[in-house]
Length: 83
Image (tube, rainbow, N blue to C red; front, side, top):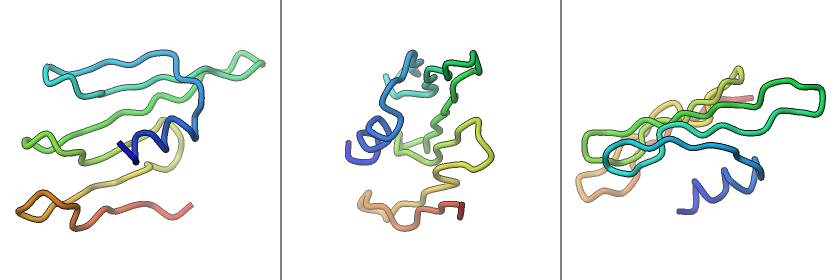
């Protein structure tokens, strides 16, 4: 919950969320600004084991490019971009 919870705190106001058959979020949309610009859309992808793989926003940089896990399920490598 920590990573997704931090994403919520960072964005603060999301307006919509779609889920897959396993009830995992696949797309979250956020409010735009006062000038009428569209808000960010953030998509989530998962490994077949339902573990988070990537978090990609509609901005120029993905939040998480990819994630690999150890056999016991712990995160082994999470690749981010440099902003």
